[in-house]
Image (tube, rainbow, N blue to C red):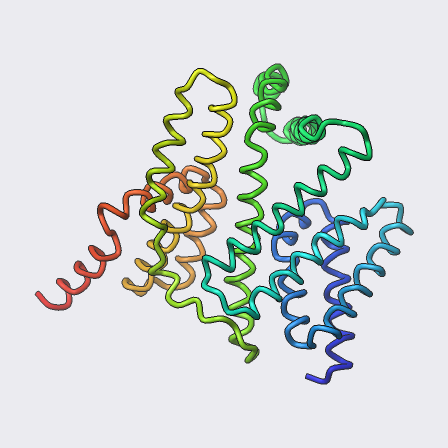
Length: 318
């Protein structure tokens, strides 16, 4: 790739991505999770200096365009998106294991997010948890407006509206775990997509090994047991902390469940179209997440992948 053409192409794609996220409400959330990917790609393809130049120009152009159209763009949000891509591209150069890569990147991003909230809370003179509570309440109100436009009965909408204060308190309590989980998922998705993209374009990517064989640490089950026990302690803070720990632990077991599913598809040579349908079903039917978490949790006792492999061997060698 010619470097000058690459810089022009990269700048156009990054600017378009930023504008798509900001200007199109329905496309924004689906694109947002993959926004770091083109940053990682062009920073790796063009080099550190040229990649940073393209990113800085793209953020500036996107901010100017959004300001002109009266969208009220937040420069700090654009910087946060850019920082995610830059951080991931730097961590990838260190050739860590997949666990260390996700953990390091996610914790840095989470700490930056906490600092972002604390900074704005300090400037506004509002307690940080009050800011989060206000944000959650606003999200619930936006969802209620969306539900009113959809084929949802007035009784259901009114029930949610009547319980909005309790729902707000609940989601405010588990907001740390939800935020961290969102960051981890973003990092994980970009690593998977980045590995495939880099392999196709000939860019060096860390060898994470066979991800379909990945397992969570066995000691994690004790953390889950302790967190579950905290829910029965008649103290609000114990319940809140226990819920946050269970959510993050559930996410880890979800990854293990997905690894088991990937192993099954590979062993059974399931066509890609059916794999995509399965992953699409996970996004539509949330109960599938619980099922996969269950597979991940009980895998330490059942060892599903061993049984799948033995079953295949028995079929081929009766």
